Image (cartoon, rainbow over all chains, first blue to last red; front, side, top):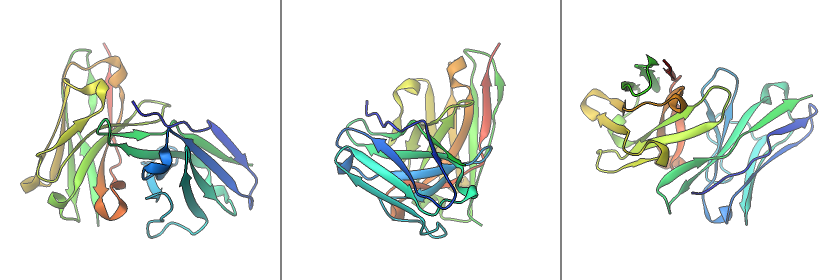
Length: 108
Length: 120
C-alpha cells in the first residue's frame, strides 16, 4: 500500500517559516491535501490540490508538490498555528485514501 | 450552517458490533462522496471507508474489509458505518467527512467525532 512519510515534529520561532514535508513514491503525480488539527478538535482543510487554499485560510499557508516530496509552508508563524498537520492523497492503485504520519508543529 | 454530526459511539466488547450514524445538514447531501476517518488515542488519522453519492461505489481500508460496511440514506441525509467483529485496535474517534469535488475530493467538512472503545 502507498505510504506517506512526515517528520514527527517541527519547531519554529514566531514570525519565522515552518516547512513540513510529506514523502511518497512519485507523489508529484498525485493531488496532495493538507489538514491542520488542534488538540480535541476535528481536522481542518488548509491546502487542497497541492497548493490551493480554501476560503478563510490565511495566505501564510502555501503548498508545493514535485517528485517524491510535497511541502506545506507556513510563513510568519503565529502561536495559533501550533497543531498537528497531515498530508493526504487518493491512491488510485488501491482505491484508498492515505494520510501521512502527521507532524506536530511547535511554536517556540 | 453546513454541519455533520456523528452519533452511536460507545463501549463494546471485542467481537461485538456497533452502528455509527452521521447526520448532515446545510448542504445537498446527495451530491457528495462521504467518508469515515478514525483516529486512535494519541495516534494519527486513518481513512476507513467512502461511498459515492448514490451508494453505487464503496471503498475500504484493508484492515476493515469484510468487517465494516458503509452506507447512506439520501432521503434522511444520513451516513452510516456498520462495524462488526470489532477488535481492540478499532478503538478510536470516528469522524465523518465530506469530499468536495470543488476541492479535488479533499475533505472540506468534518464532524466533531464519536468515540468507539473496544474493550472487555
